[in-house]
Image (tube, rainbow, N blue to C red; front, top):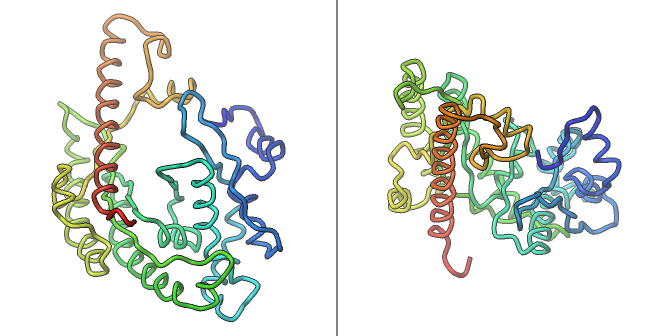
Length: 306
């Protein structure tokens, strides 16, 4: 939506016309062990939203996952790869400083590979989007095992002299769990349908009895009082975001978030517009509440020296 990629091969054309302006190109010196320092990314400005910028991803970055995985296992003995584990964090910090950014939002693929392992381990916070279905319940159980393993690895990696003293040092992990976002479900009478509600209950159980205890054991949870202060219960849900239904197609077409749509975007009138307007207002209120909750949690969990 930000890049307005609608034509055939438009993404490849953007990469060709904008070298260096995607995550893969920006990391190339570290990935290829070239004697060139990483530089802040020339980010893409988000049209209509001042001070919001995008570092486009690149599907081919997955091709470098093997190199990253090897470096994260053998960086003590392979000097040529010692800079790779800390390169993501270094690049983001340099770019954030260039743009005076308050937040870096990293959108991850749904996988457990070396890239996600690195990005989660070096993040300040993690939130988990999920849906009320069997796959998300299984994923929550998997994350309860995987995230502690990743953090244990990161703590060891941060103490390795080769990685700690690299040109792009691997930081000591300080991850905290923000919560889960439950999305993509349908409602009836303003409540999840019976089929979805059954999986809501299973999700709640997996989060409360499996994920949270596993994270708590590794010191990855914030004080419970912080969650309670923003209205979160033991299920640690940041928000419930139901299906956008027909609004999502219009959102993509006009390149606006659902909550920013107006009547001219949708081109409807009368009772149809009245119903759509109420949905848009509801989503706007929901996302405003989500943003405020995240701001309060991230600010409240850090001391001034952080």
